[in-house]
Length: 179
Image 1 (cartoon, one colour):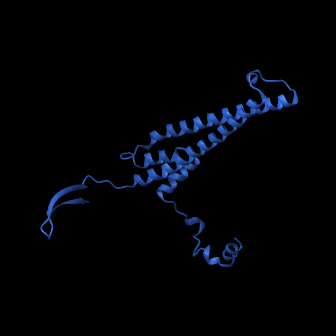
Image 2: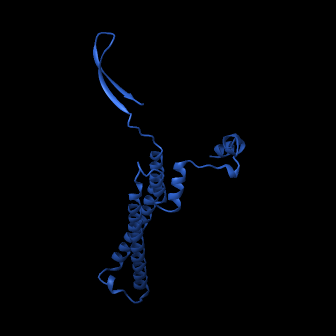
Image 3: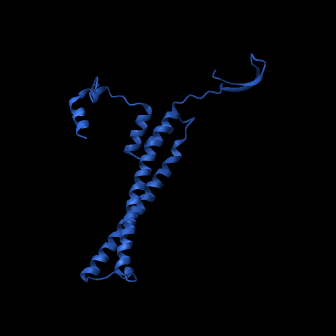
């Protein structure tokens, strides 16, 4: 570990840059802008892709799905957070002799503690789910932006023809033509 640290410190060529572009010359590619828009406002990259290519791309239908995913994971996050806080308060009240919540009266101390841990885990999974939906929509906006500029032509053709090879054997030739 120390050797690796010494190499990184003593050999600046590993992490040096050849040239630093001026701040005013940063130009983002089309897909990078779509990803940036989606990172700032979820779904904005999909809307940008739909506007950029209205004939070939209809990515705007994905926006309600994005907000449904974020809304569902947000709902579960808030619900699980409230329940785990209620269970934490119930367990604290049971240990200190405070007022008990009738909602949790059917459970003993061990069961309340187990429920608290379960809702704590579910809350953490809700956070991961929300992050996954958010990151997925950013990546999807970038991937879809690549297809906005993808050139499709009706002159593409695929043909399958018989062919006679030099050693007197028959075969098939698959030919893809771009015109």
